[in-house]
Amino acid sequence: MRYFAYGSNLSRQQMKERCPDSRPLFPATLPNYKLVITGWSRKWMGGTATILRSRGDKVRGGVYEVSEADLRKLEKHEAGYTRQNVTVFDEDTPVRLLQTLRPEVYAKGGDHHDELLPEAPVVRGYGGQVRILDYVPDRSTSATIQRIRQGRP
Image (cartoon, rainbow, N blue to C red):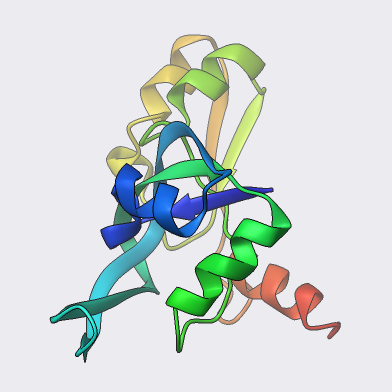
């Protein structure tokens, strides 16, 4: 299983202690989240961090391969956290992916502006079109995925 590490779990030594069978794979970026300090740990005398959705922000971290047993061990150290399924990227923008796939139409939600998208010139450069769709409140891709995961239509 793949695990996105951030904060103190970026320490390879800490991950080896908590998850002996873990293996670091690659650096990654989690878009549209931010790292926030939410508390204080008396155990190790430092802040405790979590990630929260935040459009336009990003969290840098690393992806590890971990076993189910190691994940359970890790969760014992992460009291108060809720495991989340997230999608991370090994680059900050989808430019390389778009250069490979070369879609004829690249569409983004209405809360984006094509002049601010670093990938727009790439798409136009190979003859593709960039389309900004109308903004529809409460109909974002993220909200749709969350409803699906919760078993709601």
